[in-house]
View 1 (cartoon, helix red, strand yellow):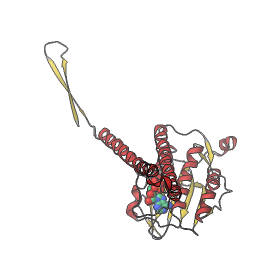
View 2 (spheres, helix red, strand yellow; view 1 turned 90 degrees about the horizontal axis):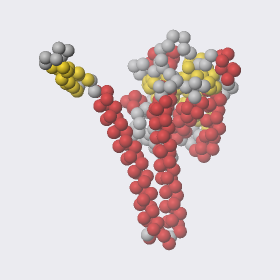
View 3 (tube, helix red, strand yellow; view 1 turned 120 degrees about the vertical axis):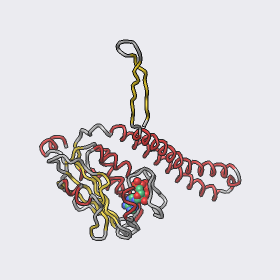
View 4 (cartoon, protein in one colour; view 1 turned 120 degrees about the horizontal axis):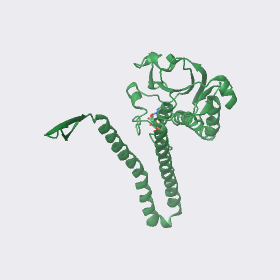
Length: 299
Ligand code: ADP
């Protein structure tokens, strides 16, 4: 709390009144602390690859200068670090752009299946390199939703990227579209984190409870390491990573699911996770269905 006192003249002008204003600044302070924390985390994440690049530049200027083998190896490592920095910067920019617009509802209409097909096409080289197969049996279902095309593609992309990243060679990632699911499926039954077949299912973003609103859902399922129940509520925090997980050379930025959360929020949609150690993970994003007639005109 902060108390502000102001002396005020009385209407008769024969003395002063004191006005005491008490302002609850808990939220303001919390936001300030979050911002400082975020900047500290972001700087730390950027400093690590930067320190590595500086170190290798020094080595290349020094004893590695005349050793072509070492030079090539160091240049490869530097390329990985530079790639990491550029992914971090682009995720940071995405996050701040989305946060800036979060209060403005998106205007367009998007076919969720079309967005998922575009993502599958875009990741086909990466998934083939990793030996991970992608199965998408519902690709022919039309699922028009209210939303921003690029942002919805980014949601599916981040979920599919994670599913591939945490899969082993030989695994399959499943994508499934449901064009019309009721609100209850998108939120209520497992709000306390119910267990279904050994997996814990938890809503990460709960959709608006607007009567009559229908949802289309995209589900991404992997057969990777899965996650313990206590890790699930923190997944959409910026820079949060589950400890002890291997994600290969292309390690993540820790921002992917934070970006997903903000986009889903802006779309007044929902997001759930279902997982258990050793049983893989299932992420589902829900978006409000676009009206059939209007959707056909614009799709
Ligand atoms: P990152 O870029 O590190 O993947 P995300 O925000 O996308 O960041 O995810 C946060 C953390 O959640 C990851 O670091 C990982 O520990 C865990 N995670 C996300 N998706 C999966 C998944 N499909 N399987 C296992 N763990 C996952």
